[in-house]
Image (cartoon, rainbow, N blue to C red; front, side, top):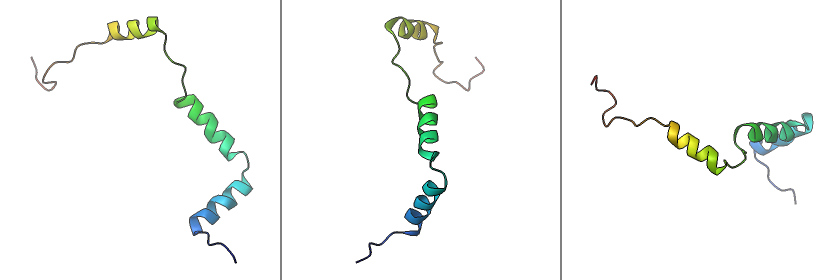
Length: 62
């Protein structure tokens, strides 16, 4: 018995067959933007010290 595959699943399978490097490129992009090394305690301290305090109502001209 043949298993049902949606049009979208068929499209993805065809795309992956045409471009086998696609998943590796996606993982490289994710690593570039999201998978970062944890910050050191010193880096966290400097980032906290560099923050500016936001006013209670930011749209005021005061």
